[in-house]
Structure formats: structure tokens, C-alpha cells
Length: 413
Image 1 (cartoon, rainbow, N blue to C red):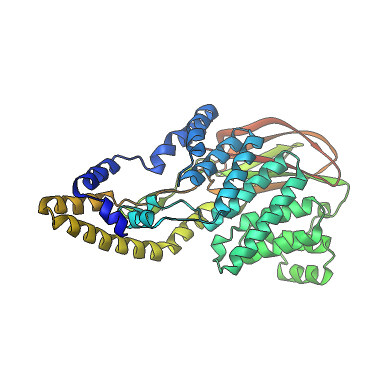
Image 2: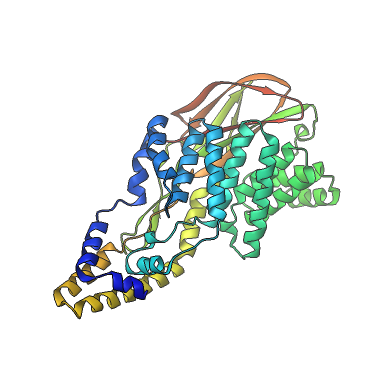
């Protein structure tokens, strides 16, 4: 702190503050790329995000996360995984903050501190890696990510993280991966853990019944059947000669961080409107609707709400630091001291960094099919069930007995 105060001389410090006011925020830097993604102008989005992700600085992690999603949506799955693997390593590194940088965050704003990512975001990294590997048909690599998800889950649970921070989708996805590899006992354990994190997952009742029976946990199976009498078991769940088409649908855009209209020093989350609310798969003259398994928007809002106490404490400390700095300058020059107080408070803006390319919700469609080749379409539906302009048409898939085929699709409007 002392070194920071010594370096902030009246003239140089004030010039620095005035220059800082013109600096772009994270949201303004990625806005154009997100708009390009919404138009499915992938080349423009990738061109704008790549240099941000490659630059080694305190914000690199957040740009890597956005760039990884953009690559996935553009169909560049291997490149996407390279970026997410880099992000995973960076997110797990021991954080180090210099004394002067911490002091600077108090005197100026939270954006001077290294972006570390929220807990649910860190677990999401491995979910995205797993989704890419699944679509590439690399089940063994997806299993590696399922184990990584479990490792992080155990770590964060030991750290007494709250349920909404533990990312039930990642745990749910790991269960699907274990099931795809015929590790039914591991699949049941993961489904059960996902249920403990979020008992409102739309498909979880049938998942618990099915996976318990497949794992030969017959007492547990009977217990779940009594608890969820509304679930109608399907013979297809247990037929070994059937395969399955699994569509993982990422719907819309999560909320965006902006400065609160009530207090500019604090961030708030604003929902992003999405016309497409649900997906429908048409295959073999039948239609199947997606079902929600994770609400990203809810998790983000609850995480920020839980952080409010820490943010308030930091900004109160920041106000005190500004008062000390301004008084130091005022003792030498009263006018510059007053200007420093004004500039420091104007520069104290909300930290609006976040993984902003995440979807609003994640939904899933699971379709049992006999072995063979099929053509299918995915249509986006609005809240009234009408078609939107978003679709994935004339897709071909080969289903093999006893195996699952994964397709990942994202709506962007």
C-alpha cells in the first residue's frame, strides 16, 4: 500500500485516472463478437476473440472461456478443446496478487484484480470439454472429463460451496457419460449426486429409477419407484439391442453483467431475451421435445447475490482508501486533492467480467433407436411452441446397438 501511495504523485496519478476513465470494459470488448455469433458470422466472432484470448494478462481466463464457446458453436471442436484445456490449467493455477495490485483495486476498481472465475464456471470448463469429446465420438476422453468433474465436485463440496455453485449440469452430464460407457454403478452415483444438488432437474426421477435398475441396486430401485410413482418405466431403457440419440441443446444467452442503476460500483445481471426457448427433434416421423436439465441464468444470479456481502466490504474499504489518497494529495495541493477524490470515485466502476457466452439454459433430448442410419432435423421453438428461424436440418446419424450418439446444438437468438 505504501509503495502504491508513493507512486501516485498528484500530477501523474491524476493523469492516469483520467486516462483510465476512457478504458473499455470487458463487456464492450466482447459485445461485437457476441453480436456476430448471434448472426452466425463465426469468422468475425473468432477473429475478434482470438487476440483477446491469446494476450497474457489478468483477464485472459475470461476471454479464453468466451473464445472456447465461439469455437464450439462454429464447429471447430478440436480447436475449442485446445482452448478449454488451456483455460482449465489457468483456472486451477495458484492465484497471486501483488500488494500494489490489491491496493490498486481498492483505490480504483475490482477490474485490477485477476479474473478467477466463479465456482460453477470452473466446473463448466470440463463439461464443455466433455461435450466436445462426446460429439467427436471420443468417449474415453469424455470419461477423463467426467473424472475431472468429480474431482472438482469433491474439492468444492469439501470447501462447503453452496449447491448452486456446484453446477448440477456438469454432474448430470458425467452421469450420462458413465451410462454411455456402461459403467452403470458410477452413472447411478452421479445421477444421485446431481439430484442432491438440484432435485428439480426435469428428467432426474426417471434417471434415478433407470440407473438404479441398470446398476442392479434393486432395493434402491424399488425405493425410488415408491417415491416417484408418476414415472412410467419404458422397456426401451433396458433393451440392449437399442442405441440412443442424445441431443444436448444449449438455449439462448445467459444474463449479462452491467453496472447497477442504483449503485454504479456494483454489478448486476440483466437477463438476455431469447426468442428460441425449446428444441424439437423430428426423426422417423416422430417428434421429441427438449427438457431442461440446468438453468445457467439462475446459477449466475444466485452466485452474484451470494457475493454481495464480500463486494460491499471491498468497496467500503475502497472508499476509505480513496479518502486517504485524496488527503495525501490535498496536503500538497488542495485543488488537486479535490480533483483526485472526484477522479478516484468516478474510476471506481463495477467489475462486469463474466463468462458471457454461456447459454440461458441447457436442455436435453434422448431418443431410443434401433441400429441403423437416420436423418433428422432440429427445430427451434418459441414460448408459444411456434417455429423460430433457428434450425439444424438434414442431419445424418448412425446408431449402433447399445451405444449412444451425441449431438450438441446451440440456439443464438
